[in-house]
Length: 524
Image 1 (cartoon, one colour):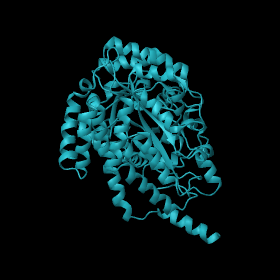
Image 2 (cartoon, one colour):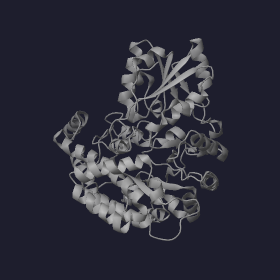
Image 3 (cartoon, one colour):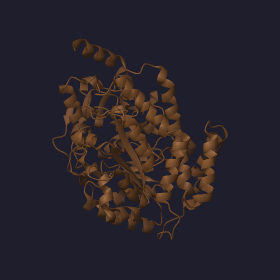
Image 4 (tube, helix red, strand yellow):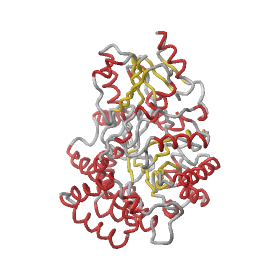
């Protein structure tokens, strides 16, 4: 059989970093690791192609070649997924949809022939057999969550590596915490499951043999969900980097309790971790308690962030507005916290009640759900009725983004981060390259020149940009690479904020919310 694997397009959002990727000559941040892994699980006799519509067009001749189309998507890719499925249906092509979206929307909503719910490792063999025999069922659902040791090497031959800014390796699935709004624990469970260290090293060997020398994103739900296993992997990664004499920087996601473990932070630093995403959510402790984000309470959030930064790791922070406990002062408090934290990439979003979560079920019982949502928590739309006046929440949200992504505020956070993470100090670790060596690659040189032109010559905030570069040249020459990377990423965030500000003339509230609010007012 000819299996065409298709990854739907992501819309332009704060998370896409689309405008920053153009500086590097890249088209997407990471490749579709899930589909690359599914490809390996399919029968070896099948012919396979992969089209990532984020980096290339889906052509008619690709569809003409295929016997079956297999798609994987997240909720935010729903519109693109629907368009591709419809295009396949028009040609009479069978479609199979999996990924996180299959756990939150029904087969009828997805309009596909076959839906795969759950993780693929235990399902694909049966699905493939049924497809070959023409007996495939409408729905395939995993009876259990497989151990990660059953996950094979992804098929790198299917992607165009040079179109991505980072490669991806998955080490674990699941998270031990129980946040009300999170769909991760609903899909992947609360028991962290990990690959063997040898599996991870084999994936890195494969990337290295394919010529990759840039950053690798460890795409775990929570890298430190099992701290003992994480430490074991960090030791192995440090040895691997030393063996290959490569920087091979790592990025990952973790929980804030990372700050409690100096040994683990040092091990991550030695292993080459340079960035970690943390779900901080809100500086309001009652809000954290209300949504069961207890791991962020009973501690100073600011001190925890600064501690992690001091181990050489950039903190990328996730923040949420729209909790039931939010009061009118939350917007000023959010801005104040973000500025003091030194988190340049502070991703502030409106709360989304995702299907399948505890939050969605609770709000559904309270009659507050408007729709299934769109998956973009950095847009300006709500899919539920908030406690706060909805128009006030929208206005406050836009105000926060305008303030934290003004050039002056953004560069102040970058400088604070650089002072903590890249202090002028002593010797480099064995095998560690200097910031200048890491920065002087072809892609980064191109990004630097493009940055000078777009931000320094034609940018509306060029004076703040040149002031920042002068500071970097005089105080942070030892970490110019990190500084310029963040300047480029800031460009994307500022472009997105400008677009959101220009959209203020459109209705603040979607029609569904206006109707729900009117009905609520009429019943009171």
